Length: 416
Image 1: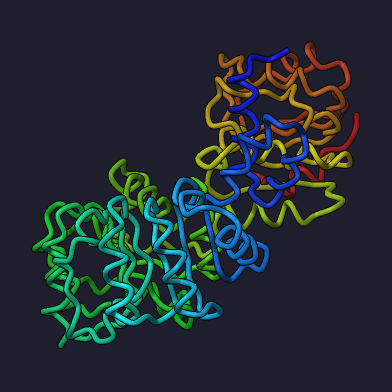
Image 2: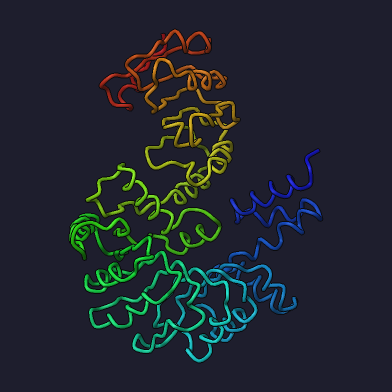
């Protein structure tokens, strides 16, 4: 029997990693209900019918401190009445993230925002809050603790004075603007020295070729390691929700991109983060597949988000037999390889993308744990096939590709 602290950590981790399945955990036991029920209100979106209903029920049946102690991330959309939004915000004073596409009355919403002492994330337009950009006042109390801001307003050169107020936000480190003019971008980059990320987000109508051209026109001279250009996420609010639960979002992708530039993995002259599709999109697609036979991955590391989550999903496919990808991308490091995981129990054909050195035994040892592996492809030209065959008697075909592509090699890997 597991210690009660470990049981709680397991159930809470499951609820946060798979929020849509979290309600099913409530019926496990009384203790699990007490652990999980507060997490159901951690992220509230008024555009989700079940969540919207739960909010109304909580407001009608629970004391004000119920939502105050649970809600941390809040998104208001146009489907809600303004009065209901004011009532919810009045109770959810411990939120750290405020997002909205609904327009409010400045005299009603601003005092409520000023009462949010822990507000760090902002995803909304200033027009929605202040009515007009000329009336924006970022010296108000509610904006003083914001660290991450995505301002939705489409700014012009004439809005430089308003945008310059961003320089006065004492804790702002991450800023995203929707295709701002060079005058404003350059001014903010020069004046806001504590800024770590400046994300110029292009609208969904911009093609990839257009984005590449726009990214080459820099709003500054020389180089600035804080600046990048990215494409507007195709499912923005799902992306926001994923970030609220600790997963990948516009901020983590930007940080990862800039970190790779600093390490030299991406050219210092490259400022465009091209990917529209996030790892979260891939997780959602995997969750929808019902009878997966083959899995291949050439994108960024799943481990940066959660190897546990990927393995949990793959474990749900009893017919999965083909795996083509990097073990580092799945597990995070060679020291974490666990091919004895039940997700690999039925794999028969595997192409491992790592360059395998002759004296590195970590992959050979890990592969011996795959019980039904009969076909193996490895990217190495100095490989001793005997070393692998000795530990895997089930292996029928094993070859090391040289100049061939992964796909052509795999197709020609015949038995015997």
